[in-house]
Image (tube, rainbow, N blue to C red; front, side, top):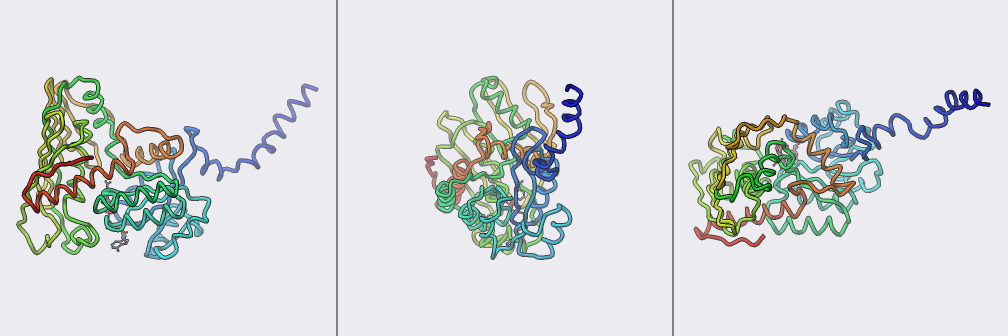
Length: 368
Ligand code: NAD
């Protein structure tokens, strides 16, 4: 009997189990870490969309399975490069049909800023989780509508704040939370680069919603918040424009802004499309300091504190982000720094206030 049982177990059992779990199903629904895999379609197959797609190749819990694009030739190229089936390809006219596609869990919206709102609203209506690039939208009012739409549809809304998962950044946050730095006194965030092609969407207010502040200054805004651990209570801001042809009305070239926090800490930040070598965070505190330089580029991020150099290893930001987002969506995991719509809405409220402070020359109070 024993030998017969052995025979059945060794020879027949694999054939009984295998039909229920084909290798395709295994790769789509299960991962090495045994969590459910987030099956993602990317909307907007541009520079950053490509970077996310490449990074997702190394994800354990997220997989690129679909695309949404207005350019048929790009769709064909992505299909062959990432092995994407025809049934998971959509254009901007027909992507509402994604609601009938059980093989896509989430759509990552990586289009120009002013198009994020429509993308997220339609994705939510189709019953899919929405991941959206920063800035979540081009003003707080639109952001509120996006949050509400996702709530109504009972889907998650997450925003691509990749720095919230970056190991050296997280170590400084840990030190601050554990009291190793003492009382926080000052933050400086310098973010900018020299922008090229004057015809790109980033310099077209209709598509960008603004200028450097929307695109790169948002890192200093968001960084002010996660580095100090506080929400700003007021903001002052000043704009400088040296090129009114390239940076038209409503498209800021350089803005300096200052925050005051409830604890008495202050921040001083610079956002620009007209200077290089600016990717630096500095946090000064009662018992020490922390510096990240570069602070928000694609990495490796470098950092040091009064205790010495930070040595946490670099991991591709978007790979970590997408794996973490799978856990947030499926298991409700709480990240150290939130990446949800409410978090992004705070940045949008601050952006609105900075533009108002520039326009009026007044200090603007914030209630976040
Ligand atoms: P990009 O110009 O390289 O790509 C934009 C894509 O959107 C293109 O494929 C374009 O064809 C498509 N698109 C759809 N409708 C369009 C329209 N009406 N006009 C122009 N393009 C249209 O830009 P990008 O650098 O990939 O930026 C896309 C988004 O990603 C932006 O919101 C940006 O802020 C964000 N981003 C985030 C990071 C990050 O590190 N988190 C980095 C870069 C960009």
